[in-house]
Every structure is written in C-alpha cells, then in structure tokens.
Image 1 (tube, one colour):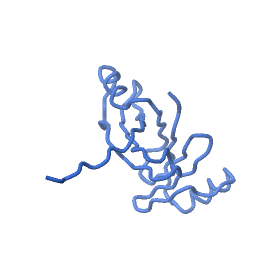
Image 2 (cartoon, rainbow, N blue to C red):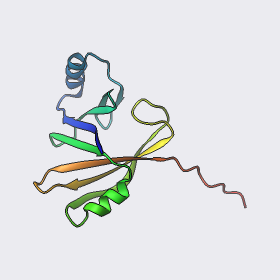
Image 3 (cartoon, helix red, strand yellow):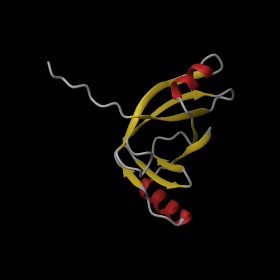
Length: 129
C-alpha cells in the first residue's frame, strides 16, 4: 500500500493552482472545472486541489478496493462503496487503459480516508443478435 493522492481544500481554485505551481515548480497536470479540481503529479503521487475537499484527505492505493473495503467493514464506517471515478485514456493522472476505483471510510478517529485501485477497462459487450 502506498499514498497515491492527497487532497487540499481550495476556496479560490485559480489562486491555489498558482500557489502550488510556484511551490512545486511545475505546471498544472490537469484541470476539471466544473467541478473544481486541479491536479499536480510527481513521484507516483497526485496532489488534488479541490473546492469540495473537507480540508486534507489522504488516499491510499490498494491492490483491490473491493477486498480492502470488505476487510475494513467490521472496523470502520464505509461512507462510500467502491465505484469507478475516472477512466484513464492516457498516463497523465494514472495508468492508461485503466479505470480508477474509489471508496471512502471513516477511521477510528473520525477522519475520512480514501482508497484507490485500478482495474482494466472491460470492453463493451457486442450487441449483435
């Protein structure tokens, strides 16, 4: 398991993007606005600047999000079940050709923890009769 992403809250997305670009000495990797997301990448990690983040949020990458949720279910409140959040068509924010799966739980101290996993994109079923 490794830390894959850290989210920071931003009141002013443009101001925060400029600040972190200067701090990290790198350009923004991707912007999604709406909903108000800016990503920076480096060293296998992502920094997410997010208008909706509660304050800070750590995301751990796990081999299998579904299995991790089931392992933690007796010990934590699962606030969001595993679901696909994004499909990576290129390597900008994650491995190309993979779906990114997220789940969220509340730790023993009341903090939200994110889990991230990747799985190969399943081709659409052929609708031929």
